[in-house]
Image 1 (cartoon, one colour):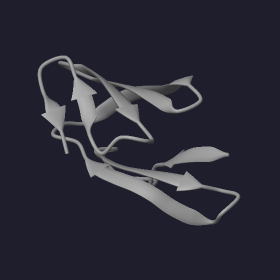
Image 2 (spheres, rainbow, N blue to C red):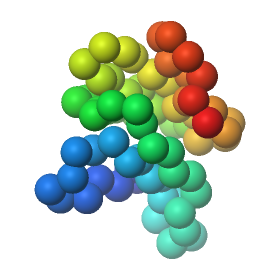
Image 3 (cartoon, helix red, strand yellow):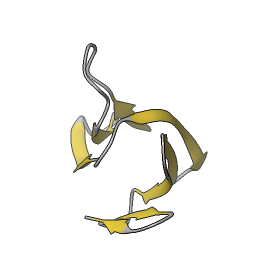
Length: 72
């Protein structure tokens, strides 16, 4: 079971993925701009939308694939 944590009152640009069953943070990433929408698009892939780009973030890879760049 995976969850994407967002801190109330933040700009939603720092993303963290947690494994709830293991009670462990699996990944985190600082986005270059605010995420305005996100959704799990497969069991291991998260879709992220900002004002200017769409990104795909795999829970297995160490990168975020965007429409314009790969982010670490």
